[in-house]
View 1 (cartoon, rainbow, N blue to C red):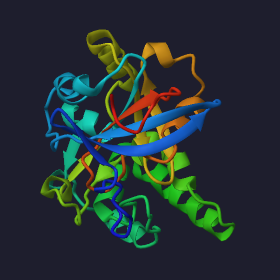
View 2 (cartoon, rainbow, N blue to C red):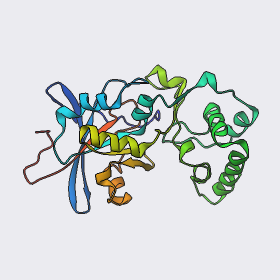
View 3 (cartoon, rainbow, N blue to C red):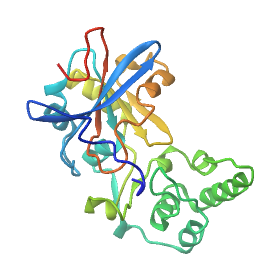
View 4 (tube, one colour):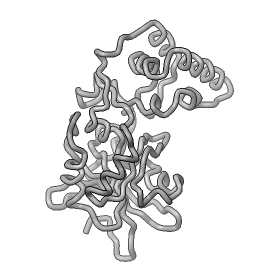
Amino acid sequence: MGENRKIKNNSESKRERDGHVYYVRGIREVDGEPYQRYAVATHFVERGEDYLKVLEQYIRPLYQEGDIISMSEKVISMCQDNTVEMKDVKLGFWAKFLSKFAMKSSAGIGMNEPYKLQLAINMRGLPLVLWASLCSGVGKIFHKRGIFYKIVGQDVAGIDGFYSHSAFETYHTLAVLNPKEPEKVCQNIKEKLGFSCILADANDLNIEILGVSPDLKEKPDEYIIDLIGDNPAGQDDELTPFIIIRKRTPNSTDEMD
């Protein structure tokens, strides 16, 4: 949710079908095959909603057999209420101190936010965070980035929230953690709704695949990442947490049939 990034939803790419709004994100060629991606607009998904019902409401009317659905990890975590409120994070000395040395990231709020760093300490322990901070500092001398998150792990890297500048007040004081049992979530969606799906933690700098439906397990990570490598869901306030990925045919257009 960077302040200077261009929001991807615009009037030129906006389409509507039977009252359902989506945005054309463009074609990516993966393994020699062209895929069009459609970002599907939703309401602001609140904590505790049923992700199956949300997918049924927004994806079912636009879905075609063979489509792959990419889902933002945040929307699933909100449905699971896997969140932490700022008032429940007791800010300590080390979070205040270390956050002063953390780099700002164009991919969103990083460990320069003291409450986010304190949450990382709570999750992984102070010794590991101190070690990761030290190694990260050394890495900066050699222009190597991402060391901190490699040491503390994906659970910390996936912390999302405490966005004081978000258009949605909920995110000002709420952190969203990685989804619980992401592979089970994808399996449940495939069994209940029949959708092939991907659950991803994505931003404009990095794509982390957290889970895929059973029918996609044979696909290599590189294939899955390539489908959404340009982060078509966006990371500002787009409200497009679901991407329909559709293989193009010779008669395909940018419009959904």
